[in-house]
Length: 164
Image 1 (cartoon, rainbow, N blue to C red):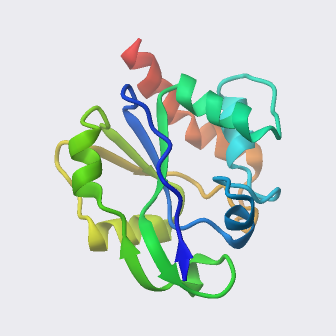
Image 2 (image 1 turned 180 degrees about the vertical axis):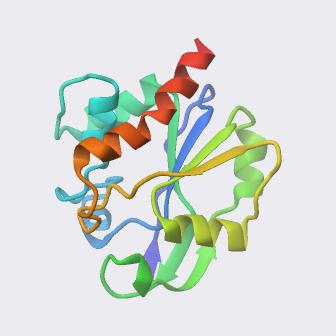
């Protein structure tokens, strides 16, 4: 049984980035997007024009300073390996309570088609929120270059700038 992490969020977060379920390496390290082949942190540091770091505390500091929340669609599931396609017997996180306690979340981004699929299946879309699918930061999604992923993820910058 795989069990997801608690969300990283603060009271000012209005953007939520959702993965499906942490991969094996992330679970071993107890870090969001912990596999070195995952480009998530490279994308975020590039977006905010900050020097990339492997220091997890500094990574978390970045998302907290930018008021970006991190979580996963699933609370727990079964499945071998890290591939979303291997997920079985999935159980979603409690988004009703999450959104009630974090009412500033207005923009929800999925980092994979599976995350989007599970969210729509188990949670459903709320007309008061904006949703978008981002290119997967997974190293397994190699058909899109890092530079193009950064360009597609830059939609978040526009939302953050609106808030200022």
